[in-house]
Length: 248
Image 1: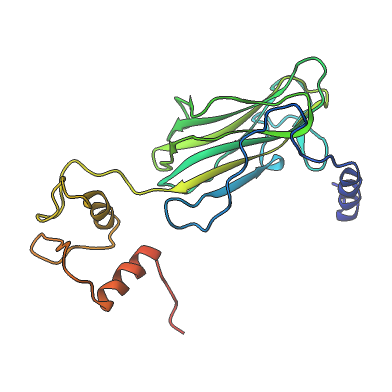
Image 2 (image 1 turned 90 degrees about the horizontal axis):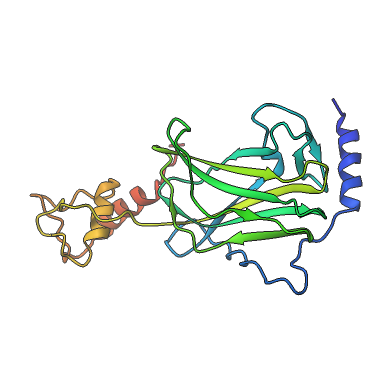
């Protein structure tokens, strides 16, 4: 095993030769990353970065290290790397980015897939179109406009990077998964007598009830037009935000 000093020296040597990630001139720009926002609301976007070192070979075979901390499978037995995707349940994946270094002169590239599998890791299906690198050095390619609803209880989500070449001309640098919070779709039947399915706020009131934030105002009603007291507001906010402080 390398010592920390040896590892630091190796990493520094790689960093000295680091290449800048940029779209080359003459190539259409990839969709730009969304502005990072706090994890609340349904319009802000959050992102999870999956670095190359989080990807591994399923057979435990050898790995090569490329520019910086990029990596690639070092033989052609299983020319792909896999990683789990850890995104909060109840969110919606909207964008996926592949970061790569590709110096291939023979048309062999890195490909990235997002798979949605069942809770046994079987019956996997593509959740997006395949992302493919280009022979343009270190750069990125991304797909925006996705709408992959995340259900971690019933599904597993996996990234698969496939390498057209394992000779050190195809490197995986990492992937970025961007997601947004969302309100659950409305149920088919109403919980409260005074909030029928046709009510304009039905979806949102049902979401509050389903998440345990409110139980209504009694007698099977929600009282959607009643004023809200400061005490009731405290209950709503504390439950919605999951406010928990240990008594000192």
